[in-house]
Structure formats: structure tokens, C-alpha cells
Image (cartoon, rainbow, N blue to C red; front, side):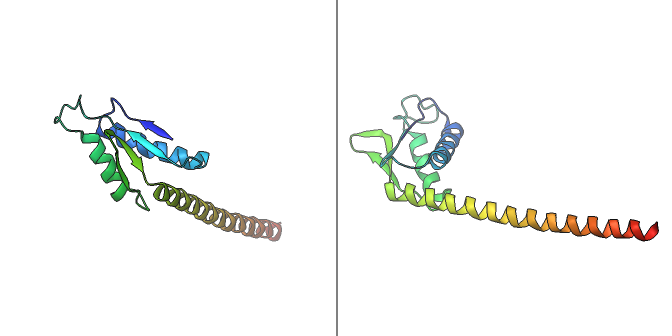
Length: 131
């Protein structure tokens, strides 16, 4: 899996990685390697150094759970490689959380359905008594 962030600013780049990781989750993680092409920062307007790479690396450690370790590809500082184990653990975590969310939503909907049935039944009994 490769995410190419050439030409992206900081906000778009980090959002692109988040969306891409969610897509990896949705499609099912099968690749052994996830690479993010951030570029070398040649067109960076802020500094002459690659800004996006360090921001993406920071986001993967601090804003993603469980954290995903990344490093610059050997011989190419414009490409990040993500730790396979970290991506797999993140995908498993996301699947577990999604399952919990659906189970919780199902429980809430079940309670709402039961309350509606009880309320409708009570309402029918009240109408019958009034007649």
C-alpha cells in the first residue's frame, strides 16, 4: 500500500494519511508494507527541510492508537515505511472498536424498540379503557 502525498500541505497530508489508513482498514489489510511518500520538502514554503514527513511521523505516534512506528526509507528521506506490526495492530484495534460500537448501537436500538412496544401497548390499553 502506498500513499503519495506529493504536493499536499500539512493539513491535507495528515488528513490523507488518516483517510488512507481507514481505507486500509475498510478494504482489509493484506500488504506486508505500507509506505507514505511525503517528498523531500523541496517545495516547502516554510523551511528547506521536509516538514510533512516529521508531522506524519508525529501523528502516527501521538494521534493514532495503537501508535504506528515509521521511519525513513533507506536512501530516500522522502518515503516513510510503516511498521507492519503497528499497522496490523491498528487495523485489529479499529475492527474491535467498530464491533463494540455496533454492539452498543444495537443494544441502544433494542432498548428503544422495547420502550416503544411498551409505550404503544400501554397507549392501546388506555384507549380501550376510555371507550
